Length: 316
Image (cartoon, rainbow, N blue to C red):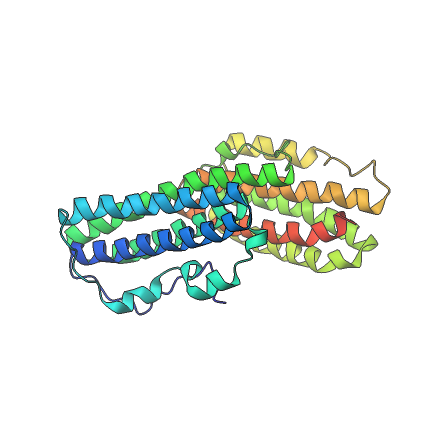
Protein backbone atom coordinates (compact mmCIF):
# COMPACT_ATOMS: atom_id res chain seq x y z
CA UNK A 1 0.00 0.00 0.00
CA UNK A 2 1.28 3.48 -0.83
CA UNK A 3 2.31 5.82 1.94
CA UNK A 4 -1.00 7.39 3.15
CA UNK A 5 0.79 10.60 4.02
CA UNK A 6 2.31 11.14 0.60
CA UNK A 7 1.24 13.29 -2.31
CA UNK A 8 2.64 13.10 -5.83
CA UNK A 9 3.07 16.52 -7.42
CA UNK A 10 5.83 15.79 -9.92
CA UNK A 11 3.51 15.20 -12.88
CA UNK A 12 0.82 17.70 -11.96
CA UNK A 13 0.34 20.04 -14.96
CA UNK A 14 -0.13 23.75 -14.47
CA UNK A 15 -3.85 24.61 -14.46
CA UNK A 16 -5.13 26.76 -17.29
CA UNK A 17 -8.19 28.21 -15.55
CA UNK A 18 -10.10 28.50 -12.29
CA UNK A 19 -12.71 26.18 -13.79
CA UNK A 20 -10.11 23.45 -14.23
CA UNK A 21 -9.08 23.67 -10.59
CA UNK A 22 -12.74 23.69 -9.54
CA UNK A 23 -13.31 20.50 -11.54
CA UNK A 24 -10.33 18.87 -9.86
CA UNK A 25 -11.41 19.85 -6.34
CA UNK A 26 -15.00 18.77 -6.93
CA UNK A 27 -13.70 15.38 -8.11
CA UNK A 28 -11.57 15.06 -4.97
CA UNK A 29 -14.47 15.97 -2.70
CA UNK A 30 -16.84 13.58 -4.45
CA UNK A 31 -14.34 10.74 -4.23
CA UNK A 32 -13.72 11.45 -0.55
CA UNK A 33 -17.45 11.44 0.15
CA UNK A 34 -17.86 8.13 -1.69
CA UNK A 35 -15.01 6.50 0.24
CA UNK A 36 -16.32 7.70 3.60
CA UNK A 37 -19.82 6.52 2.68
CA UNK A 38 -18.57 3.05 1.72
CA UNK A 39 -16.59 2.70 4.95
CA UNK A 40 -19.58 3.94 6.96
CA UNK A 41 -21.86 1.39 5.35
CA UNK A 42 -19.50 -1.50 6.16
CA UNK A 43 -18.95 -0.33 9.73
CA UNK A 44 -22.67 0.02 10.35
CA UNK A 45 -23.12 -3.56 9.22
CA UNK A 46 -20.49 -4.56 11.78
CA UNK A 47 -22.35 -2.70 14.52
CA UNK A 48 -19.91 0.23 14.85
CA UNK A 49 -22.65 2.83 14.72
CA UNK A 50 -20.76 5.72 16.36
CA UNK A 51 -17.80 5.53 13.97
CA UNK A 52 -20.16 5.01 11.01
CA UNK A 53 -22.05 8.19 11.97
CA UNK A 54 -18.78 10.09 12.24
CA UNK A 55 -17.62 8.96 8.81
CA UNK A 56 -20.97 9.96 7.31
CA UNK A 57 -20.56 13.41 8.86
CA UNK A 58 -17.03 13.76 7.45
CA UNK A 59 -18.24 12.64 4.04
CA UNK A 60 -21.07 15.15 4.22
CA UNK A 61 -18.54 17.96 4.70
CA UNK A 62 -16.87 16.97 1.42
CA UNK A 63 -20.24 16.71 -0.36
CA UNK A 64 -21.30 20.17 0.85
CA UNK A 65 -17.94 21.67 -0.10
CA UNK A 66 -18.23 20.27 -3.63
CA UNK A 67 -21.74 21.69 -4.00
CA UNK A 68 -20.70 25.12 -2.73
CA UNK A 69 -17.66 25.18 -4.99
CA UNK A 70 -19.70 24.17 -8.04
CA UNK A 71 -22.06 27.06 -7.38
CA UNK A 72 -19.49 29.74 -6.56
CA UNK A 73 -16.79 28.85 -9.10
CA UNK A 74 -18.91 27.89 -12.09
CA UNK A 75 -22.27 29.47 -11.44
CA UNK A 76 -23.84 26.05 -11.27
CA UNK A 77 -22.57 25.06 -14.71
CA UNK A 78 -20.56 21.93 -15.40
CA UNK A 79 -16.91 22.82 -14.72
CA UNK A 80 -14.19 22.28 -17.29
CA UNK A 81 -12.24 19.05 -17.13
CA UNK A 82 -8.83 19.14 -15.48
CA UNK A 83 -6.16 16.99 -17.18
CA UNK A 84 -6.33 13.34 -16.09
CA UNK A 85 -2.70 13.45 -14.93
CA UNK A 86 -3.84 15.58 -12.01
CA UNK A 87 -5.56 12.59 -10.44
CA UNK A 88 -2.14 11.03 -9.74
CA UNK A 89 -1.72 13.63 -6.99
CA UNK A 90 -4.90 12.56 -5.24
CA UNK A 91 -4.28 11.36 -1.66
CA UNK A 92 -3.57 7.64 -1.50
CA UNK A 93 -5.85 7.28 1.51
CA UNK A 94 -8.77 7.38 -0.91
CA UNK A 95 -7.40 4.81 -3.34
CA UNK A 96 -8.89 1.35 -3.80
CA UNK A 97 -5.78 -0.21 -2.23
CA UNK A 98 -6.13 1.97 0.86
CA UNK A 99 -9.77 0.97 1.26
CA UNK A 100 -8.92 -2.72 0.88
CA UNK A 101 -6.16 -2.49 3.48
CA UNK A 102 -8.32 -0.61 5.99
CA UNK A 103 -8.79 -2.51 9.25
CA UNK A 104 -12.50 -1.93 9.75
CA UNK A 105 -12.63 -3.69 13.10
CA UNK A 106 -9.78 -1.47 14.32
CA UNK A 107 -11.23 1.77 12.99
CA UNK A 108 -11.88 4.13 15.93
CA UNK A 109 -12.99 7.78 16.12
CA UNK A 110 -9.33 8.76 16.57
CA UNK A 111 -8.29 6.89 13.42
CA UNK A 112 -11.25 8.33 11.48
CA UNK A 113 -10.22 11.86 12.45
CA UNK A 114 -6.60 11.00 11.65
CA UNK A 115 -7.69 9.99 8.15
CA UNK A 116 -9.58 13.27 7.76
CA UNK A 117 -6.56 15.27 8.98
CA UNK A 118 -4.34 13.51 6.44
CA UNK A 119 -6.78 14.35 3.64
CA UNK A 120 -6.90 18.01 4.68
CA UNK A 121 -3.12 18.23 4.86
CA UNK A 122 -2.67 16.56 1.49
CA UNK A 123 -5.25 18.85 -0.07
CA UNK A 124 -3.43 21.85 1.40
CA UNK A 125 -0.19 20.69 -0.23
CA UNK A 126 -1.86 20.16 -3.61
CA UNK A 127 -3.68 23.50 -3.60
CA UNK A 128 -0.55 25.36 -2.46
CA UNK A 129 1.30 23.76 -5.37
CA UNK A 130 -1.41 24.87 -7.81
CA UNK A 131 -1.20 28.41 -6.41
CA UNK A 132 2.41 28.72 -7.58
CA UNK A 133 1.48 30.32 -10.90
CA UNK A 134 1.82 33.74 -12.49
CA UNK A 135 -1.89 33.88 -13.28
CA UNK A 136 -3.28 36.09 -10.52
CA UNK A 137 -6.84 34.76 -10.69
CA UNK A 138 -5.72 31.12 -10.49
CA UNK A 139 -3.24 31.96 -7.74
CA UNK A 140 -5.86 33.68 -5.58
CA UNK A 141 -8.39 30.88 -6.08
CA UNK A 142 -5.96 28.07 -5.26
CA UNK A 143 -4.55 30.03 -2.32
CA UNK A 144 -8.06 30.42 -0.88
CA UNK A 145 -8.64 26.67 -1.22
CA UNK A 146 -5.34 26.00 0.53
CA UNK A 147 -6.30 28.32 3.38
CA UNK A 148 -9.62 26.51 3.81
CA UNK A 149 -7.85 23.17 4.12
CA UNK A 150 -5.33 24.56 6.60
CA UNK A 151 -8.18 25.77 8.80
CA UNK A 152 -10.02 22.47 8.40
CA UNK A 153 -6.93 20.50 9.38
CA UNK A 154 -6.55 22.60 12.54
CA UNK A 155 -10.18 21.99 13.51
CA UNK A 156 -9.91 18.26 12.84
CA UNK A 157 -6.72 17.98 14.88
CA UNK A 158 -8.55 19.30 17.92
CA UNK A 159 -11.25 16.66 17.44
CA UNK A 160 -8.58 14.00 16.83
CA UNK A 161 -6.75 14.90 20.03
CA UNK A 162 -9.99 14.80 22.02
CA UNK A 163 -10.80 11.37 20.58
CA UNK A 164 -7.30 10.14 21.37
CA UNK A 165 -7.64 11.15 25.00
CA UNK A 166 -11.03 9.51 25.30
CA UNK A 167 -9.81 6.25 23.75
CA UNK A 168 -6.59 5.92 25.72
CA UNK A 169 -7.41 7.86 28.87
CA UNK A 170 -4.50 10.07 27.87
CA UNK A 171 -3.16 12.32 30.62
CA UNK A 172 -2.90 15.99 29.87
CA UNK A 173 0.57 17.43 29.37
CA UNK A 174 0.87 18.53 32.99
CA UNK A 175 4.14 20.27 33.75
CA UNK A 176 4.84 20.84 30.06
CA UNK A 177 5.19 24.32 28.57
CA UNK A 178 1.89 25.79 27.38
CA UNK A 179 1.35 25.17 23.66
CA UNK A 180 0.26 28.80 23.34
CA UNK A 181 3.83 29.85 24.21
CA UNK A 182 5.07 28.44 20.88
CA UNK A 183 5.21 31.56 18.74
CA UNK A 184 8.04 30.61 16.39
CA UNK A 185 10.01 27.68 15.05
CA UNK A 186 12.79 28.55 17.50
CA UNK A 187 10.29 28.17 20.35
CA UNK A 188 9.10 24.77 19.15
CA UNK A 189 12.61 23.43 18.57
CA UNK A 190 13.73 24.54 22.04
CA UNK A 191 10.68 22.94 23.69
CA UNK A 192 11.00 19.74 21.66
CA UNK A 193 14.69 19.47 22.50
CA UNK A 194 13.93 19.65 26.22
CA UNK A 195 11.11 17.11 25.93
CA UNK A 196 13.00 14.63 23.76
CA UNK A 197 16.17 14.92 25.86
CA UNK A 198 14.26 13.99 29.01
CA UNK A 199 12.52 11.13 27.23
CA UNK A 200 15.85 9.85 25.92
CA UNK A 201 17.18 9.68 29.49
CA UNK A 202 14.11 7.79 30.71
CA UNK A 203 14.20 5.42 27.76
CA UNK A 204 17.88 4.69 28.36
CA UNK A 205 17.14 3.62 31.94
CA UNK A 206 14.12 1.61 30.82
CA UNK A 207 16.13 -0.11 28.09
CA UNK A 208 18.53 -1.43 30.73
CA UNK A 209 15.62 -3.46 32.12
CA UNK A 210 13.79 -4.13 28.86
CA UNK A 211 15.92 -4.65 25.76
CA UNK A 212 12.92 -4.14 23.48
CA UNK A 213 13.14 -0.43 24.20
CA UNK A 214 16.73 -0.10 22.94
CA UNK A 215 15.71 0.84 19.39
CA UNK A 216 13.16 3.33 20.72
CA UNK A 217 15.84 4.90 22.90
CA UNK A 218 18.22 5.11 19.94
CA UNK A 219 15.59 6.74 17.73
CA UNK A 220 14.85 9.33 20.43
CA UNK A 221 18.54 10.09 20.87
CA UNK A 222 18.85 10.64 17.14
CA UNK A 223 15.87 12.98 17.32
CA UNK A 224 17.63 14.93 20.07
CA UNK A 225 20.71 15.41 17.88
CA UNK A 226 18.62 16.56 14.93
CA UNK A 227 16.72 19.02 17.11
CA UNK A 228 19.93 20.33 18.66
CA UNK A 229 21.38 21.02 15.23
CA UNK A 230 18.19 22.66 13.98
CA UNK A 231 17.86 24.80 17.10
CA UNK A 232 21.35 26.22 16.63
CA UNK A 233 20.24 27.59 13.29
CA UNK A 234 16.78 28.76 14.39
CA UNK A 235 17.76 31.28 17.03
CA UNK A 236 16.76 31.96 20.64
CA UNK A 237 13.28 31.11 22.00
CA UNK A 238 11.04 33.74 23.59
CA UNK A 239 11.63 34.84 27.17
CA UNK A 240 8.39 33.47 28.66
CA UNK A 241 8.94 30.09 27.03
CA UNK A 242 12.53 30.00 28.28
CA UNK A 243 11.25 30.40 31.86
CA UNK A 244 8.77 27.55 31.43
CA UNK A 245 11.46 25.33 29.92
CA UNK A 246 13.71 25.93 32.91
CA UNK A 247 10.87 24.82 35.20
CA UNK A 248 10.24 21.79 33.00
CA UNK A 249 13.90 20.71 33.06
CA UNK A 250 14.06 21.01 36.84
CA UNK A 251 10.84 19.05 37.43
CA UNK A 252 10.76 15.31 38.13
CA UNK A 253 8.53 13.29 35.78
CA UNK A 254 5.82 11.28 37.58
CA UNK A 255 6.83 7.71 38.41
CA UNK A 256 10.59 8.09 38.10
CA UNK A 257 11.27 7.58 41.83
CA UNK A 258 8.46 5.41 43.12
CA UNK A 259 8.23 2.46 40.74
CA UNK A 260 10.63 -0.44 41.09
CA UNK A 261 8.36 -2.82 39.21
CA UNK A 262 9.40 -2.79 35.55
CA UNK A 263 5.87 -2.91 34.12
CA UNK A 264 4.70 -0.10 36.41
CA UNK A 265 7.72 2.02 35.49
CA UNK A 266 7.00 1.44 31.82
CA UNK A 267 3.40 2.53 32.31
CA UNK A 268 4.64 5.83 33.70
CA UNK A 269 7.06 6.07 30.79
CA UNK A 270 4.15 5.48 28.39
CA UNK A 271 2.20 8.28 30.07
CA UNK A 272 5.19 10.59 29.57
CA UNK A 273 5.33 9.64 25.89
CA UNK A 274 1.64 10.41 25.57
CA UNK A 275 2.14 13.81 27.20
CA UNK A 276 4.78 14.59 24.57
CA UNK A 277 2.34 13.67 21.81
CA UNK A 278 -0.37 15.82 23.40
CA UNK A 279 1.96 18.82 23.47
CA UNK A 280 3.10 18.45 19.86
CA UNK A 281 -0.43 17.89 18.63
CA UNK A 282 -1.70 20.93 20.52
CA UNK A 283 0.97 23.07 18.83
CA UNK A 284 0.05 21.66 15.41
CA UNK A 285 -3.64 22.39 16.05
CA UNK A 286 -3.05 26.14 16.39
CA UNK A 287 0.33 26.83 14.77
CA UNK A 288 2.02 30.22 14.67
CA UNK A 289 2.90 29.66 11.01
CA UNK A 290 3.29 26.93 8.41
CA UNK A 291 6.86 26.10 9.47
CA UNK A 292 5.75 25.49 13.05
CA UNK A 293 2.83 23.40 11.83
CA UNK A 294 4.97 21.13 9.66
CA UNK A 295 7.59 20.62 12.38
CA UNK A 296 4.90 19.89 14.99
CA UNK A 297 3.29 17.37 12.64
CA UNK A 298 6.60 15.56 12.21
CA UNK A 299 7.12 15.49 15.97
CA UNK A 300 3.56 14.23 16.51
CA UNK A 301 4.08 11.41 14.03
CA UNK A 302 7.32 10.33 15.70
CA UNK A 303 5.63 10.55 19.11
CA UNK A 304 2.80 8.25 18.00
CA UNK A 305 5.30 5.64 16.78
CA UNK A 306 7.15 5.85 20.10
CA UNK A 307 3.88 5.32 21.98
CA UNK A 308 3.22 2.21 19.93
CA UNK A 309 6.63 0.79 20.80
CA UNK A 310 6.54 1.63 24.52
CA UNK A 311 2.97 0.39 24.83
CA UNK A 312 4.10 -3.20 24.21
CA UNK A 313 6.28 -3.05 27.34
CA UNK A 314 3.74 -1.21 29.46
CA UNK A 315 0.77 -3.52 28.90
CA UNK A 316 2.30 -6.81 30.06
